[in-house]
Figure 1 (cartoon, one colour):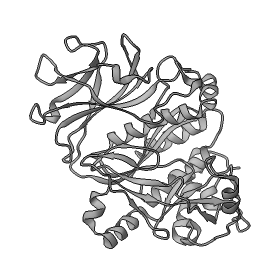
Figure 2 (figure 1 turned 120 degrees about the horizontal axis):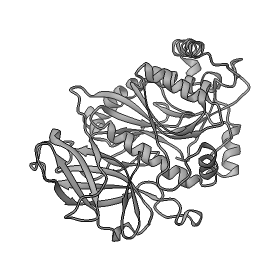
Figure 3 (figure 1 turned 90 degrees about the vertical axis):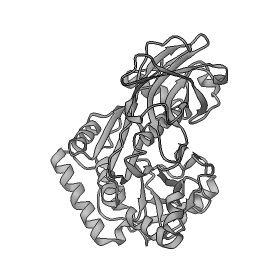
Figure 4 (figure 1 turned 180 degrees about the horizontal axis):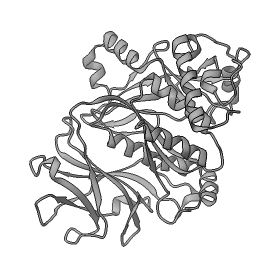
Length: 405
C-alpha cells in the first residue's frame, strides 16, 4: 500500500523499495517506486534514511536518478489530479554494510530528520534461480466477469513455461477473485492489490469511471505493477515476462531460449537485456472450433502477422535491466540493453484481441491484417499441448464451479 510524505512543494506517495546488489551494479542501490503530484520533480530534494540491523542511527544519502515510469507529461485532464510515477535511487558503497542487514528505508525532506514512513526493503536471494515469472499489470474489471478466460490463460502460460504468475489488481469481479484464490492456494499465483495513490477514487464504481476516462493515467498506473513485479524477482527468475491476459508467447519458452542459445551463442543470450517477439493477431475465422467463445486461446486458429513492429513483447532479463516499458527494457546496467529480436517463425506474441486492432494502427493497416488467413503455426497444431490445455481448463472450471458461455 502507498505511504504518504508531505513535501513543502507537493505530495509524495511511496509504494515499495527494492535492494539492488546485482553483480552488474557497482554500488548498492535501493530502488524506490513512488508517485509525485508534480512534474517538476527535479526541484525536489529528498533524502533516504537507510535503517541497518544493529545500528541505532540511519545511513543518510540523497535520493537520485529520478526517472518517470510511464508517461512523464501530464495530460490536461490530469493536471493536479493524477500523480506521476517515478523510480528513484538511494545509492551507497557496497562496502558500507552487508545486504542482508539492510531492513528499511525512510524517505524524508530533511537530511537531519526522519519522516513518518518506512518502506521495508525487499530482498530475497534464493540458492537457485528459476527461469520464467509472468507479471500481470494492474487489472481493473469490477463489473466484467472474465473468470473463464483467465482460467484458460493461466493454464496456457503454465503449460508454456511460466513457473509463477504475479498479478496486480484494482477492483475486480468476485468470480475473478475466486479464480485468483484457487491458483494462489496452488502456489502458482502471487496476488497483490494496487490501489490508486493519493486522493484518487477508492470505491469500485468511482475508480472504474475515473480510470475509464483517463486511459493514459491507467496505463501509467500499470507501470508501478510492472516495476514492482520486476524488482521482486530480479534474484528469483532469469526472465520476467510482462504480458496481458489476452496474450501468449509461443511456443514453449524453454525451447525458444535453447534454440536461440544454440543459434546466437549462450553468452550473447545471457548478456542481452531481453528477447523481443513479433506481434501476431489471433482473429476469429472460418475454421474456428466448436468450443465456446470464452476459450479464445483454444478456439482461434487464424493468425495475422503484424510486420510493422507494433506491440511486440519481451522476455525481460533480470541480470542487468533497470527500467522497462510494457514492450521492452529501456535502461540497463552497463549501458546498452542489447535487446535481441526473435525471428519470425522462431517465436511469436499471440494477441487474442476481441475488438479488432489496437488504436495506433491505421484503418487500412487493420483491414490488411484482418484479411489475412494463415492457419498454421498455432496452438491447435500441437495436438499434445492442445489436448492437455483443454483437459486442464475443464478440470479447473469444474473445481471452481464456473459456467462457460
